[in-house]
Length: 305
Image (cartoon, rainbow, N blue to C red):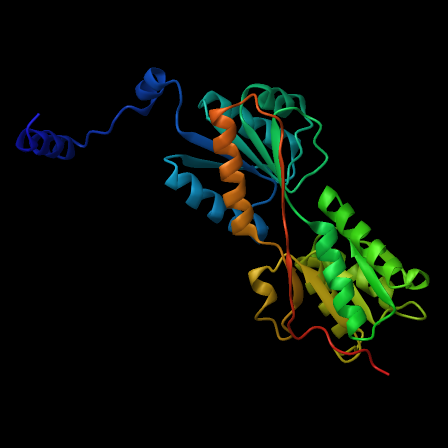
């Protein structure tokens, strides 16, 4: 076809508002070039920034991203996955969701799948991308010990393997520094209100901790609120470390020291694993563990003497 004729056809398509029939094309090619991402909680900034990295990489590979929000509800999880499967997605990405329901387990059996943020997966052919949570916890404890703190408490996250691994990293680091007698673990619920309640329980003990390592930044913001309510100065009376480097953790009245979980890098890694699995669904499962870094801000300081 001549270039003149080609341009005439394209102009006619624009004039008529024509769009290629993706359904018909998928029948010919045997794939849709769509990826379904199921997110546990779209309100969590971690997932939003992860999706940025995921979409950037998928776009470069000619794949388009569909997003479903489960809101921590198994019924919504199954509904979103069913919709993805009806659209014949080429792959699935599960963010903060372990495939435990019958629908999800069945879907992973014939759809290339990558799980992000959950380690407790015993399914063949499912790849995993996680942060090195134990290393991140050790970085937090090491930083506080270097500042002279001994009574370092931890507010534990619930409902995920990440929370469990961060708590294990805290325990290992405390024992490595010979601080086992000072171990204090309080359960939280990964919210500011939960962090405030847990911090209040810790800070009204005798003796109270001089530093708190929170399972994530939302919990840490709750710790800051509880400290202010109790008349404690941060970091003069109490040092606080969070986890995840949420955007709102920086410009607070007291910018939060936190462990930076490289979300975009995790998104790009998930895209690479998914592309590989789409090309070869029968390869063995793989685990990609991304190393975090400590970001020191103004919520941590030397222990008061």
